[in-house]
Image (cartoon, rainbow, N blue to C red; front, side):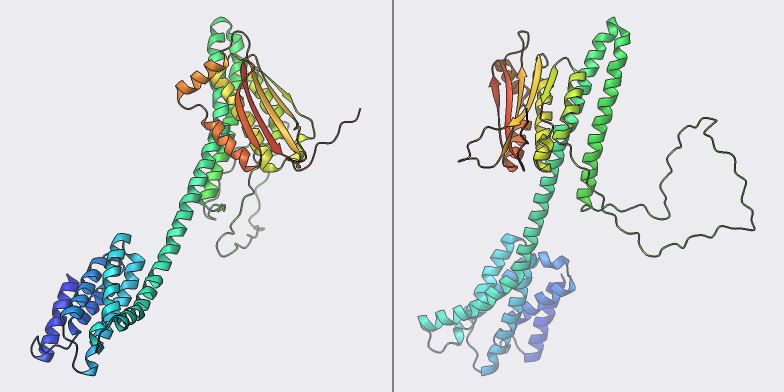
Length: 450
């Protein structure tokens, strides 16, 4: 509405200034239209920046009609209006290239660019192919410059947004892996313990108490894993910076532990009013930002405790064979990935092979060919051994396919292992299931002396 009113006012002013419509100078009408659009853009900013494509296309079309059907000016100064019009069109083109929707910006840019590139063609006395092409190419350079001025910030903003989306997606996948690798393992142990306690409580209620204690420990371990994951989420949303509480909102003190009468402190006398305690000066300004130290992820050094918890929860016995010096030979990322691999394998045993006789986890130096694998490597082998009463490997594969979610954890784990420079393979093996991984080492294991 503002643009229409302003445009009508501009045309009325031109008509009154020159007496009749026919007396209006060459190029004054499209110049007035471009000036009206620029005025409307400034007055309605920032709402107008995304709605300028169609008006710019109309202004460019009006300029093309003027170039094609209007007679060239008789006076030398007659083309001044057209030159002012081109400057206004270029300014509007830069705004459209920056803010308008892509398809509309391309359409309006083509129309306005054609108007700018061809506006000097009626001014050429003896038109021929070479002068016309040269003039169009010369005036196409400002069009390209306006497109770059508006389009380059748009491209930078698009790349920044895409980078933010990819970073958030990566953080979401990392959190999903943590939930899958750690929390799912603990919850599966809680479910197994609850099922065992339900069957034992009917015949021997006294045996249910140890199962409840193990459920409590597994629940606390799962809460710790979830707390670490939530802390990672808060650090990711806050760019790794945690702000302390406000000075006027102190944290609630922890409840004191119960004290025996011997440990209870003696009552203290109230301080006399003659000796008031001076207050410490309150620092001015905002509280300093504190960057928390990231909590280290579990590694292969925690495998013995993991194996012990797994054996205590269910009927399947887990065994671990690992040289004592193994944790020092792996990097932090490799050690954490190896721990995740063992957790994923043990979780799959609970889900898909609850009747397995035992699980063997072995960490040994990998046999390598110096010509093809010069770096030292560590082989981690996890073998699920089934007895006669357990489901065979084909039944395990059928169950995983029927559930519809089998293999996702192992496929994601394979990507993590490959990211550390290792390899991961899994499949049926001697009536059971085997997961085999080879990780690079930062240094070799020390040789045992006999």
